Length: 272
Image (tube, rainbow, N blue to C red; front, side, top):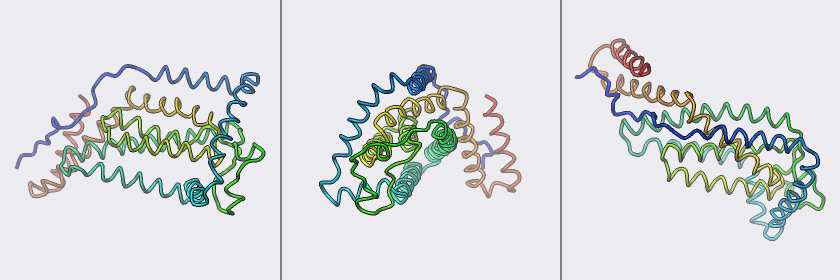
């Protein structure tokens, strides 16, 4: 059996993209300046308040609908969304069940997952730097799901910007579209819409929290795909391909020989 690992069939993202991350960086800086300008912020706050009340007034008409929103904005809701995403990534990676597709998708989502963890850490730092009370805790006459139904749901906090749920979901959505996974991207975009609206309805976030989170997520996605960071996806894909080879050709020779062959092929292709 051949000891050559078929690397030429791998998808290696070498396409050249138009650089967009400087544009998103400028937009993020503009938002930061506006957030620190009291005069401008007072004008924006009036629009923000009207938008927050608009979404909150959708509650209080149906108990079943209110309970759904409350559950979706609770810890159990977050666990359900996380489980859904994990199942989606797994099914998407295993269909169709063949080496090239599986190595491509597992490497891609694994790479995206690592970047996601890093963005979450940085996003939490941003929340601690910007002390902004959420709509549910700042506005009077608010329909408070937590008080009305005595449930453990997220309504108010002292650090509402940016929205971690929006940043994370939009990041996954943009990365899926950039890789050409349109079906997955559309599904994730639908989840993004639901998360954004339900967070504003409960009062966990202001409308500007959602809007301000969009360029931040776009910046992370652009930096991931338009800088050398994208090579990590390529290297991980080659690594998984080598592991697949070593397992598939387990009768071709000793394990140490197969691992050494896979490692040599990985280093050769990574250097190209």
